[in-house]
Amino acid sequence: MIVCQGYLVRAEDLAAIAAAAFRGRKLTMKEIRRAQREATKSKRDERQPASNTRPKKLTPADYRYIRSQCVLRGSSFAAWCAERGLSLGFASQVARGLKGGPAAERIVRELREEFGV
Image 1 (cartoon, helix red, strand yellow):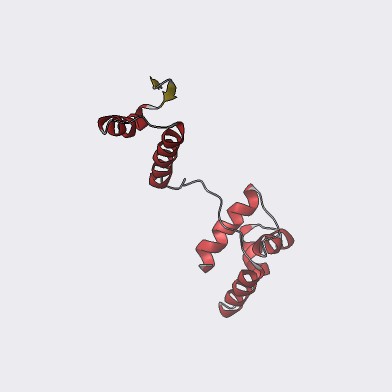
Image 2 (cartoon, helix red, strand yellow):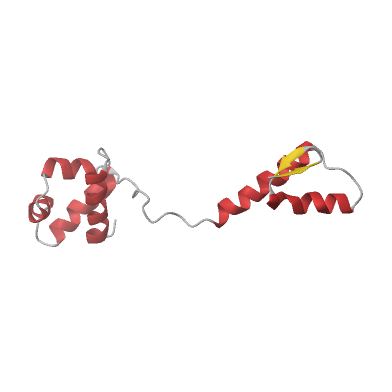
């Protein structure tokens, strides 16, 4: 932080203040705050999304699609769950978007990889 015109200002915002001073006028506090907001906004836009973000919840339509894909493969959703050691009740609630949590996120990732939902 740098003291400029009696205000604490971040070093990134000093360029805007210097440009205004070059034009021969003082910046108001409102203009300093606006420059700060724009600087943080541009940094926020540059950030990449975290790789550990939660997957989007599935919907009842996704659940119906998953079940139909199982049938087209000559199997069932219950058999898919049994192959992976999952509880059919919990997996179906996750597939309908009714459950959350770490175990549900793992199941959602598996469903998305397997069925492309």
